[in-house]
Amino acid sequence: MVFEMTTQVRVSNMEEGRQWYEKLLKKKPDFIPHEGFAEWELLPGCWLQVAEGHVTEGNGPLRLGVTDILAEKNRLIKELHIEEFDIHSRTEVPVKWGTFADPWGNRLGFFEYINKKEEEKQMKSTLGKMEK
Image (cartoon, rainbow, N blue to C red; front, side):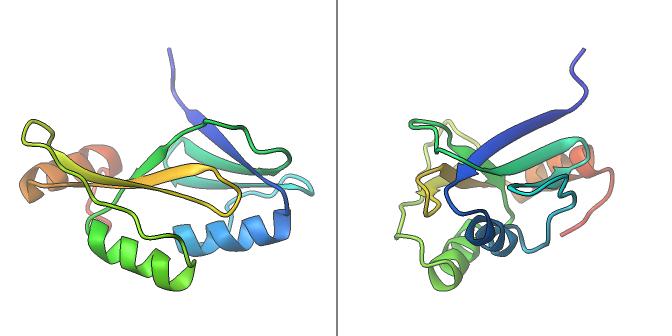
């Protein structure tokens, strides 16, 4: 039985990487067990690890659910100077999505539910309460 998960991205400079991910996630790491490593708990039992090391080619994207993909895209372009990226949608897919990269080449992305009632249902299911 799976009850938790972690995913890891690597950065060549840990200090720069920690600062970049703090801005992306709008919070400081939840756990720094040792030098060259930091962890953020994104949801209960769901961790993002940032480790100093060689970037793995072709990984990801790790997509994060957001309530306003356009606002988040604009924030990252302004605050983190990421490259412009397209927001996609398809009739048969309940979300719109976009993919971008961190400065080390790790592929990341956002997705947003098109139907806001479905989004609210998913948030309640995942978080147990509304936390926007």
